Length: 495
Image (cartoon, rainbow, N blue to C red; front, side):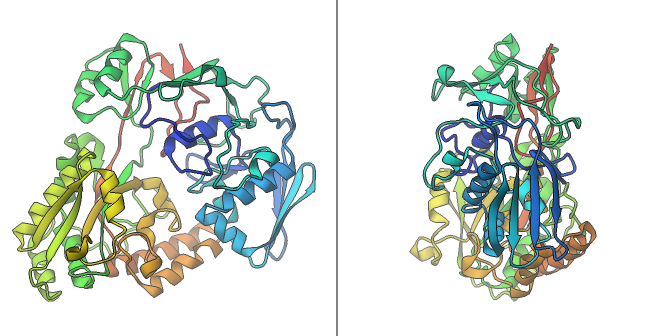
């Protein structure tokens, strides 16, 4: 296999890197997991219940759970792992803020006792920014700032330390003692059946070399092949292109709401009308087969996607409306600095198009080129552009992450406590804070509409479009599980 990025950190509580989480999902098991509809399902848990006052949850572990070193998984391991995870994960922090106690009842049972109900508790345990890996108690007792390096979990694969070649390749072997759930695989949930003896992950930075090795059968899987190489893969009868993450990635821009001109809501609304999503996706990715438009802050493919307050969307955009809104904002020719990530081709193309479109309507737009690291450093500056600040930068995140307003940074609108850009709307934030208290799907859908109604009025961010990225594989490699962000190693098989 050749995947995007490579593993530098193995501890999923230290980083949210996709490569680290891919490793963690193979080596560690977790309490609950999201199914193909992104609904939480028990994984290590056999049964659970909640008290009548909705404040105390009791969990019992299923049979057959054991760590790779031969020791059984106990409730104490789970308690320590939850506490360590909750020290870094935003959803976990909410749990801890309400937790009166998280404790072991017996070897297979533990409880989470809350001071007030939290309707989204199970969802939070199943789907979070940081992977809730159940580790041995002695590992989980380490502070989250200190990496766990043992790589001993209870998951369906064992990390092969003897074959590890840092920077070059890593290997995982089938855990013959793993007892999968009896349900069929469904997303990240269900039975984790391992059909191969070993998975090897190679680090091949040059994409042309990786494609050549895929064609020659030296590797079986290539993550995120470049768009310009896709025709080569399509023409090879031994290769298959497959979109595993059908929700894809949402590309969006964030404005500095503390400084002119985007401290004025009219200027932010102007960008909603200026953007021609089709043009931006064409400029960024080229191939129309893998792009689409998006208007819901809750993504295109989540349970909470809706059409509230989306009348601003117009195919082709509306530059005249945007120009009028800038005028109403009192725009007086202030310099608009767009942070331009030159080492991210799609982001670079989108930044250049944005600058050109702004100039067409009379905005004094200027690009500030740098690598992505430079963008990350400069976006922390809250000051005016004359003091090294910025006006706009472009980023992207998983469409699936938009199912939870406490997961994607695009949702934050609590002023200077918010993610870079620092928009502020108290009414919206009050609703976002209540999300974790709502238990039913229908109640959350109603709340999502209210939140979106407000969001597209104050405009905390602006979508440029959504894109999917196919993987390339040999025809004989089958059984890949299609889910957002991560590709599980279980279920796949090679003829």
